[in-house]
Length: 260
Image (cartoon, rainbow, N blue to C red; front, side):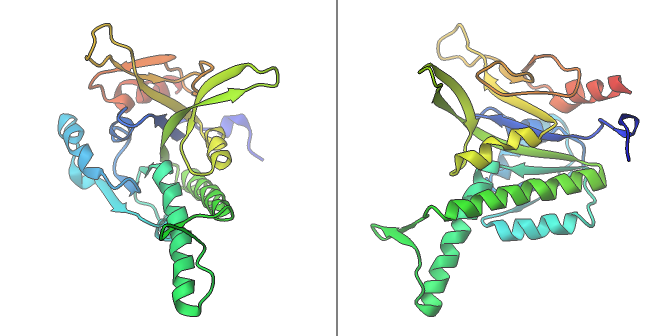
């Protein structure tokens, strides 16, 4: 039976979340190499400029584009046994969930062509997901968390989940409206519990600029502010202002080393 003296805080299960264009993937690029990317967003070309900025050897970044969940699951199952990487990146949870739903549609269409079985609902000639398909998404996301947790704990490597967020209004029992940002997937409930599994959860966004038409500084929030959920197990600033800084080397690694 382990005690707290057996706990190491050198590698983490990290969620980088924010609206599109807040450089979450760019920040993920700063974690230890070699890295493997599950490229569900399929936009690895966007990382070429920051790689040059930080002199990152492109041979240290391995990736595969994924359009369906099963090949990604099989890759994770292989990594549970053998994993030569120091960091695994899932980019993004949002697109990963879409791939799960797309896979259910393809399976239904295949059944119809092969046996005349029901291929599901169609609107205007476009196949659409039905309610039970969202159970597949929920099960897939649960499987993703379980597999990546096992890999992190067994191989002692960093896992990074990248997720898009959207503003949502929530009403309390007394009628008070509360605004917060939640992870974007088709099924809301499975996505909402993902941050609970993470050691580190960072919210990315742009600070308001006093000059109209000019973007403010990129900020990374590491603690909860009521509207955006965030947390850290490290001694990090509550709000980090990033310009072209290497997030891991400038902030994360020194905080890890500080703990000893």
